[in-house]
Length: 275
Image (cartoon, rainbow, N blue to C red; front, side):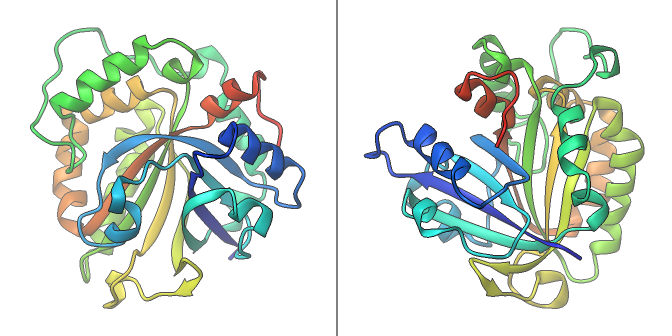
């Protein structure tokens, strides 16, 4: 199973035009990423695992970079990052073999293929989004993000997920995953475009929680046609029924980071990013 490494990067703010400098350096390197995406915000915060690396010092992550390799980043890229965290996972070859073509169709779909959004109106909200529910704060933020203009507010989003299972509960989570792929996620355009079993964190081999260790078990990058489609999913009763029946209790810890590949395209001033 091919290894992929997912790099979270917070760039040095003292570098002139840090994002464009990093991408320019990336283009001239031998690194050929599957994904380069602009970090937008946390949807769910980790509560037990990797918190000292992911949350300490209120790090504002800039980029998610997914590379089809377990090799460390070249030094000319690594030195541009003030903070850097990585997780390596085995990803099925069926997902990586034709990823560029499949991802292009997800990011730039035929309009007729995009599921319709639910009618405008008040949505039921909760106090927190930590159980993957639509909190009042998240709902208001989505409204503002969509109104902010630009293609990133209307276009595809990529949700970076880390998962650690309670012992013996992975099978229960798989029921959630099957329902997501068949109905509760798919009907809102949800697509788990990268999934994998964690083998290392920051280059060090780990044993996942499901096997009695103290590390993440799986990674996933989930696509949605827009943040509004993601909100529709969270606010749907059938999704929440499956979420609470199969997902919430199966997880020892999890986190979700919203990212936008479209934002990188906008920054480059191109219709579509070419790396």
